[in-house]
Image (cartoon, rainbow, N blue to C red; front, top):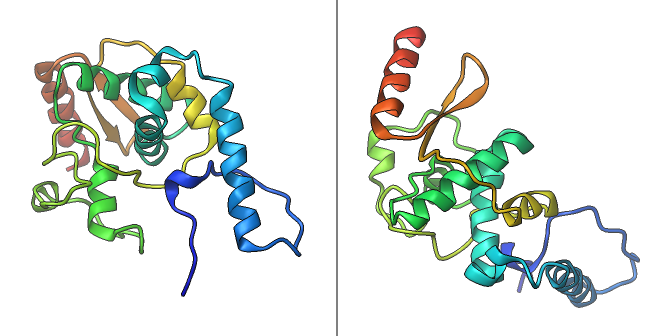
Length: 186
């Protein structure tokens, strides 16, 4: 029987351990490390609102979707804004996780059919957060999420020409920016 450590049982980081430690000791060490991390934030407003499990889920979405710390702040704000408005999150990384089950790299662009793929991780078809994380997540990303960053943005897309996400406050603005972008990539 193969033992594993689930996404929600550790914070992705570099760990220095004794090679004579058992798998059980490693797992126990990682649990303690995670508990110590979250104990530092026990009075955090967002942690109180969502709890550790949902903060880890949000953080995993941000981890897979964002391209750097500034992007992580803005994508976190979009996710929180959409949750507050009870909008579907519509995060591409969740679709990829649903399709691949984390077992391989999706080496193609997502299609409209992919966005409709019925799966419990796909935030295009489910409302709210998925029931589980889509990846391991590092403490830097969790700390960014716990900052509870604020913006008015509700939409974004990735502009491959500029290697960055483009953010919008409403659907009309988003649609306009997306159409301009699509004309450039044709």
